[in-house]
Length: 366
Picture 1 (tube, rainbow, N blue to C red):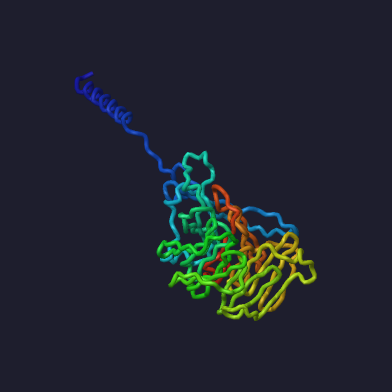
Picture 2: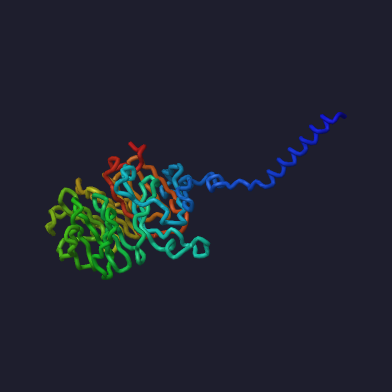
């Protein structure tokens, strides 16, 4: 073998040894969380959602109304990283929205748990389950009762421990209205300038957003009220009353359960549509539906109680977000899914931005 060929072989061996040495010194590739978990959709480094099919439900009348399709299921480990509701983001308001209390982490043994993550906060999302947003996270105690958003979406009236409060999404300020016990009862006027509320069962006040003053009022209220075209609609224990303007003068009253005993007719939970046209009520044994325009009240034998009720009464939703059910009463279809991946909540949710998309809760709805 000549010297030239021997040199070529030795050179090749040296090059090979160098390549192996380089490979040994190269650190292994670091994969992103998205690459490691391709079924997750990471919004931030520690927060993500996955798409999970809605559930098949059992209906007492034997009819299958279940609609099976994917909905987001959210996992929030670091709430401060999550997008907040932004009044300037018009994309958030192309559908009606639902707001609710939720402490995003409940497992104290989780290594990422902290007192902040385990604290109750207020969140919101579109009625189709998308666009989850953090609304308020500086609550000092657990929330309770029905919260009510002003018609312009800016002001949120809610219960926090003993207090009734208003949070301004535009400025970030929180105002304390009262600090006595009692179920929160709120009603915003249509111009979003005045909030009527109860401090205790019998004491009623109004709060002006410009003066920030609380003054007494004699406006009759329950926990389910709405102003529309200047008049107040209030769902009572046994029916719905329409009051003239800002007075206690009754214009119209529709009652249910006249053939029932007081105990069987008295409602425990109530809902009303954004214009006051429709209302529902339920107790342990009966379900009632009111059409204020027709002046009728009927007792429903079986069906889903819409604890939140959309425009024209077409769409209705369940009471809380641990399992969220939506019924389309026009097409007689129902969707049920679990939007919260961690922890649960059984506090009341509420609807706002109700007139968006002509009141339809899904973009594909007709």
